[in-house]
Length: 222
Image 1: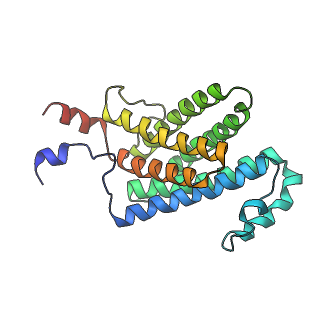
Image 2: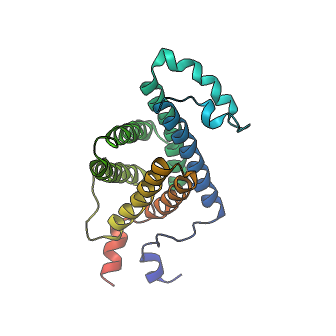
Image 3: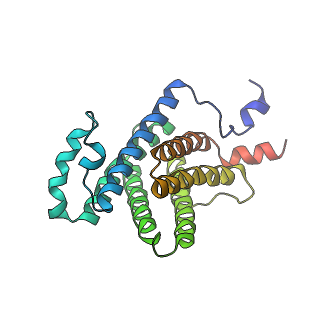
């Protein structure tokens, strides 16, 4: 491999290899399960309404008994948060190639909680003002994705990418994929839109995680 090839940031749609691609599918599946259950409970249904006919997930229906005790809104957020946490831990380990430290777990738990709140607030804003809901969703998810990328790279929690850099464009791109998929899913009930948006989000995010600002600076000077 030439020096130029090594110093050029990886492409957004670069195939990361079969093993890493399987991880992308796993974390996507975890997110989808969490979101399906979250939306069902948050809109007055039970987990059995989405997982009842899925043998591999039907055991989750037993959790419905805790909804009256915990409260519908709180249960929905906890359910979503659990699956997002698993997703983020696996993605972190795949990106770094090692287990997570105590500090990383705390950071992951923090931005996982933030993401669960973002989804909840977005859902509440939709009937109030659709445009405001989308603007909030897009902006807040971008910030959460930036934080997630920072934790993967060991950067400060609130470090922000240069606006003119490839890293910034990548963050915007996979945030848009997630937002569009989620909006179509909630508005039209098309689960395929959520699945496609989430897959593209995690696929691009994995490649963006390989891009550093040092790579961008080296590339720009060539």
